[in-house]
Figure 1 (cartoon, rainbow, N blue to C red):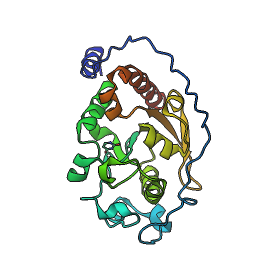
Figure 2: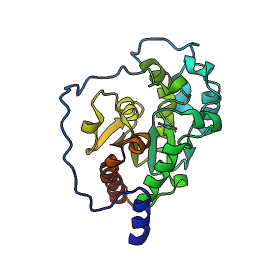
Figure 3: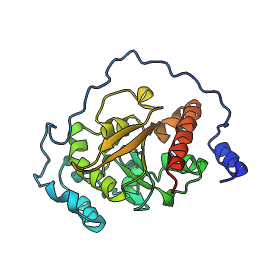
Length: 247
Ligand code: URA
């Protein structure tokens, strides 16, 4: 992407590259390190008990079929369809959001509503098309009234997400929004403290660690456009991290 293209992409995000960095106020809440229960320890059993042990062996086709048939939590009763994920199975960048909304539930694809259009612009600002990344969510089914995922719902869906991550083996994961970041990293740290540093998660017992960067959710940016400058800082960091490992 040349400078003119980047300026155009930034203009569509309504931000300017030279916006001075604003110092993030520290949250008074000291909850770093409070962990969210992992899939192994979560309360609340799946609606239909089923083994998840083999999910780590599934290929894309079998994984998608398993997700489509999933009845591991109560969201299977209210979904129109599952929202598995979309994009390049060999993507260098994996975007992880929270959960499908109404449009995603209707169309079966993540980030297709207004927040999705802003996400596309954010990607374009760092020279990436939607088809060049992979996009999925913590939850594969829409929570009614877009409620936050419960720990039990997130735990029930986690084996699917972990298998997607293992199959893609991305160079970097970008978690968009507090819910995605906290669930992915299994912490309760506020998003303001998760941004601006590289985290990592271990996938599988023998798997390596995958770097994770955190930014604001595009739906939040639509409500709080002043935060787009900070999101642009995050995107520049993502671009640097991807370029650092360019073959
Ligand atoms: N918000 C999300 O977190 N994911 C979607 O797929 C859509 C909106």
